[in-house]
Amino acid sequence: SKPYTPPREVQRTSYALWELGAKNLVNNETSSFAILEDKWPAKFSVTLRPLTGRSGYLTAQVDKSAATRNLPDGQGLYLVDNTSVGQGEFSPLSEDPIFFGPDPMVFADMKLLDSKSDETGLINKDMTMTWNWRITVHNKRKVEIPVRVEDALPVVGDGRIKLVVNSKPAPQTDEEKQIYFWEQAMGPESQWVIEHKLNMSAPADLPVNSTR
Image (cartoon, rainbow, N blue to C red; front, side):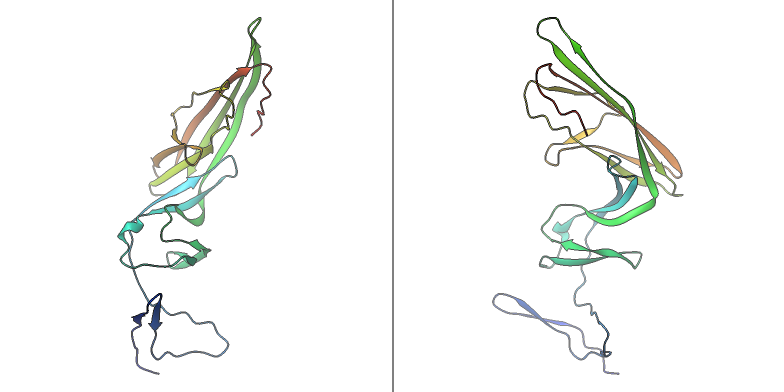
């Protein structure tokens, strides 16, 4: 076999060229070679969106400001414990979290407990609507797991519509992403219950799409 030669970066005017040196290649097989290593701090948690499915997803919020090299956008190969969990678009400048696939040991059930509407007032009638869900998060792992539960914000396109959140615990709101979210470190083999309740009122003659 040929002696190992470390990769060498050669800077050009508008791009960088990597010289890999002598390498052993096998016919009809795809080969990959590491040319650069960088370590970024990351906060890991499990993200759940129970309105769309039970599964929790291992998520990393990466501090990319710690990067020591400039990297281009492209396809990323994601691994957990040295096992590939898939590929996806990767951008060093993006602040979005990175998802590493589902965690079958952390999941959530969302059940609609009550949904009703009513009209109030004699002259200026108002329509009121109430939804009450119970979200039960399960951590089946034998270790503590930080979790984040997300639910979409209702779309309110008219100033006459009033929306009140009476959830316990109260959620935080991300207006940019249009979501409610809850965060908690769940103990080993534990459950966490969120009572998610929304109250909406609007003039009775105002068309309102109350479906989710």
